[in-house]
Picture: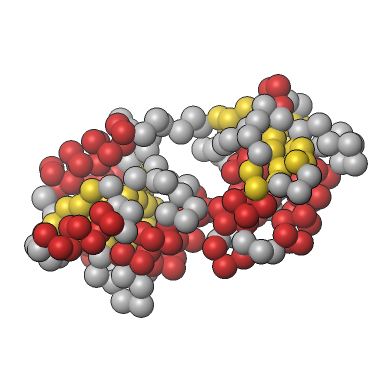
Length: 226
């Protein structure tokens, strides 16, 4: 049974409920959003393994959602379209989608496309370690331990730490961190980033003024010790 998490973004609640039942029966964990903005927020906070995205939605269509999603995530995207033209498929792929399926959906075909997309990317480990094993993040339980001590983080602190931990040892620029945690509209808000870095250090460092886990690359950004 698969442990992958799939985010479905579609404004038709009956279709979403039907898809949820069919995909959960195959072992997937399903998240659902009924508009583009809610879908982007869930993609940012929950970091699913795959996104199923409808093209025709009010306020923000699937193309716009996919373009915004690509500013902070490379999660595989499977687009659903009720149209049958070649140009619609091209538009979807140009916006950043990895594959597309036409509505009405054949569930067997959809399942096959899902399996194919998930095979293309390595499965995200449930547990991430950094700082020579001193820091442990359990993605499934959303738990953080430092030297076997449980650390209580706010959702934003957790998301910031997770982004850093997924690329431990690499420097992430201020702009990259702001984009991935807060979104494109806040990539210049370095002051907020500094405040959250300080709060994180107070919770995970033995001495926040002499950090050994969450390190600064002056003038560039931050990194977690590998």
